[in-house]
Length: 547
Image (cartoon, rainbow, N blue to C red; front, side):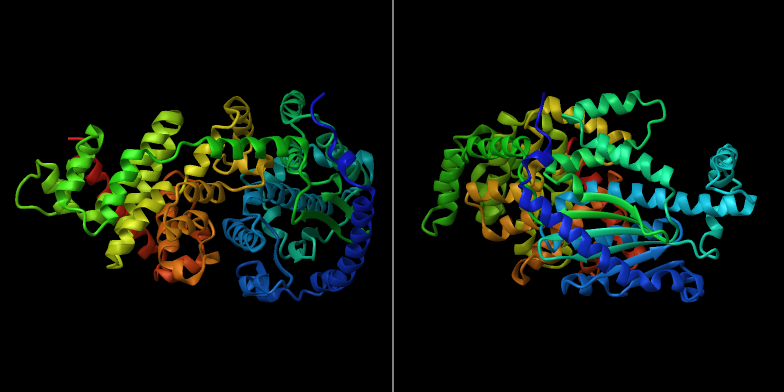
């Protein structure tokens, strides 16, 4: 029934290695956090009272780059805490090229963090009520009003956690073969609570497939552990062993560990899907021959305007696109352009080549991926923004490449979404339950490849310019690009960010800081002003286009 359990596919030697590693990590954690409780109890956190957030080291980006440990510490989950957490996780994963795990790991982390804060709040609540949390009858009595009192509109407990020295620390550590995320709170988990959590973990890894988990969890009247179970199912499909997620206590701290193999074992499911993706890439048609012929003419310095025009005239769709472009706001002319020859002279070979690439891709998408035109529309908006940003930088040559790179940035996503659309819809429904966001969902199921990497592979197949390929490959992790590609990669990233903000998948506080510094947009008002200008320009452009 479905796929075999993941742990059955893990060699005994690897299980032993995980066990030894886990024991070593426990020793390391006890050593590292030996100061944790005294620090909390002695009130040495006074420096953090204003923000109630501690970053150690403050320059976590440099620490992660150098393979050093770092952590963020707080008492309650706020937008500022979430901002720091997302930025740290993003940097931590992208250094090891596993950024496609970000959404799943963030979901798990937030679930664990919220549970940790809830546990801290529960201890403070019981203390204030004068109840013994370990006494079963008193526990039941206290829990009757716990949620309403603590999480209700007039609840004050959460605001008192910091002064009560009840804190949560999220710790990032890179080891030779694995990455480890630890969530530590400075109260021990109760035995009964630990048993419940362990039962949920065991349940998550017992399902044969994600659909079975979906039905079972929704039948649970409490909806208990829904987010955690679904996220751990994704862990399983990625190839993470059951030992990847553990919760334990040393009697003083509660420690949740997430161990991420830098290279996940390929399960039968993930291997099958990966093969289907590569087969899909192989089956993507080459660029239309007539477009490739015009590209060759544009690259030939001896080709005349007439040669190029005659070749374009064989494609009615291309004629329409060319004349529309020549008469657009991007080209200032004394009169309306009505012939192909005039359009070729106005636009130039570089502009024509840009149009050819866009038209060629559009033809392939219309023929093979018509139902994903919404993604293509978003890409068109991003492309417009990208071109305008480059023009603001007074880099005309960059503007052409930036437009194309942004236009093609999500082509990998379209291919991913074409694999088993029935399964994808099911998974998208799942994602909606916990607001996991489906933009990168497929990449996290078990594919082990991001849509940006896949997009770069497709563009290599089409023999596109190297700068174009790199812009697509790194548009989610701009500062990982080589120095010579920074201009185009950062331009596409910024344009993508504006589009994502409009679809509510991004906000200023979690935009890559390096990109903001690159464009001198660290001030939120400056950032929002540029976005407003670009958005209004695009709306004006589309309204003229549709007249």
